[in-house]
Length: 612
Image 1 (cartoon, rainbow, N blue to C red):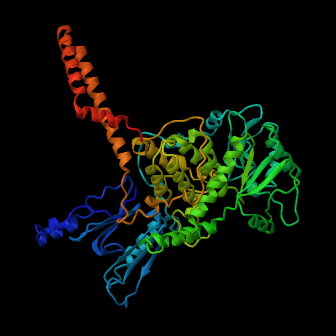
Image 2: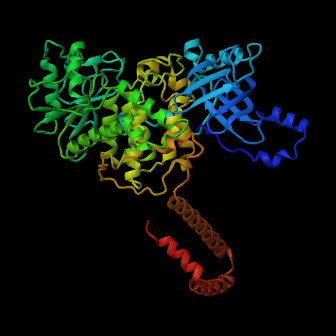
Image 3: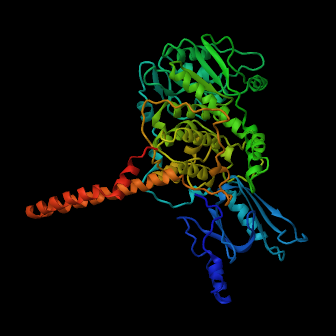
C-alpha cells in the first residue's frame, strides 16, 4: 500500500552523535534501502526540498524509477518518506520560473489521483528541474510517450494465479445455470455482437441467436439485456443492459419488447421492473442524442428512475471533497462543507437504488437495470445488489469474482475513467465511479461488521492498485481490448498478490450466514465519510485499529498458543512410557484443579467469553 508521511527514525536523538562527514554519508545512503520490485529500474535521483503541508520545507533526496517516486528526508528535525506509484499521478506542472522571488518558489507541483498533492522545490540555477521534470513526465504518463505500462514490465512472481479466480461458466453454474428458463450463449465469442461485452452470456432459454442480434441493434453500444444474477429459490433475476435507442421520434422495436417479456416470463413475474439509474430529466435529454428509455409500449413492465447523477457530477463532487480534506481538514464549518460536496448524498442514492433492486428480486420479481451505456451506474447497482443478496460475494474470493464479473468483464471503462498512463488530466471521461462502489461496500461493512470475510485493508489495497498500473487487473476498457493486448499472458493479476497473503485481508469478526439478505440503512444519518481513505495522508488523523478488534486478535493468538501447547503435551504424552503417562496424568489433574481456582486464569476465561 502507498505510504503516507510517517516517522522513520528519531533523528533528533541521532543529531548529537553525527559528525559532518558521517552526516554526508547518511545523505548518500538515504536511498540505499529502497527495495525495488522485480523489473523496476532507477531512472534518476536528486537532492530536493519537499514542501510538506504539515511540516513545512524538508530537505531530502528523491528517487524516480519506472514505477514510483520515492522521497526520503535528510533533515534531523523531521523524518518523512513518500512512496508514490507513478500511476497515481494525474498531473505534473512546473512551479515558478528562473526569475521567481521567494524561498522555495521554483520547483514541481504534482497532483495525484489518490486525494493528495505533492510540491517539491529545487535550486534556481542551471535549469535544475528540467531533467527531473522531463523524466517524471515521461514515466508517469507512458501511454502518452509510446512506452509500456509498468504492469507489462514487472517480473513479479506469485504462488497464486489471480487470473484463474473468475471463470464465467463456473460462476453461472454456481448460480444454478443453465436451466430450463436460461441458457448460456457464446454468440459473442469473437466480440461481433457487442465489442464491450464478455464472450460468455446468459440469456432467456426461448430467445434465438437471431433475436439477440435484432435486440442489439436497438440498444446503445449493442449492450443487450443479459443475466447478471438469479435467485436460487424464486428464480427472479437481475439483468443488465444499456438504454434503448428510442430517439426524438419515439422509435419502437418489437423484438426488444418481446425479449424483455421473455425475461419477465422466465419466472412468471407479474410486472418486470426496469430500473433506470438516471434522473428522469437526463433520460429525456438523452432522446436528443438518439437514446431514451422504455415507454408504455413495454407491456407488463414498469419504469423506475433512481436519480443517480452522471460521471461529470461525480467527478466534480470528489474534487470538492478533496478541497476540504487536503491538505488541511476544514474544521470550522466541517459539516456544512462536507454537505456542500454532495459526496455522501451520491453514495446514499447509489446504495438506495441497489437496495430497491435487491428488495424487488428478494420478493420474487425480476428486474432490468440500465443507465445510458450500462457500464457505470449499472455496474454499481447490479454489483451492490448482488452483494446484498448473495453471501458468496461477501467472502474474500467472492468479492474478487464480483469485481471481475460485473466491472471488468462487462466493460466498465477503467482506462477512460482512471486515465492509466495518460497525460490528459482534463479528460472529461475521468470519473471516480469505481471509488464510489468501494465506498458503498465500506459503508456496508460498517453497518454489518460480521457479514464480510474481508477487511478494510483489502478495499484500500484494491483502490491503491486501481491507479498504480503494477497489475493488469484494471487496465483497458473491455475484454476485447485486454485480449488484443495479451493482458493475461503478459501481466500479473492483483488477485495473485491478495491470494498469496490472505491473512492480512481477513476480518476476524466474520460470521458466515448463507441465506441472509443485507439491507443497509441508506440515510444521511447512518452514512459516514470514509476517513481512513479520503483523509489518510494527514498525519494528524490517527489511523488506529479499534480496541475491540485489537483485543479479539490478541485472544485469537492466545487461543492458537494454547492449542499448540496442548498438541505438544499430547504428543509428548503419547511418546512417554505407560508409567510416566500415569504420573503425568495425575500431576496434570492436580495442576488443572489448582489453576482453575487461580483468579488470573478465571479472569482470562471471563474475557474469552465476553460477548462483543
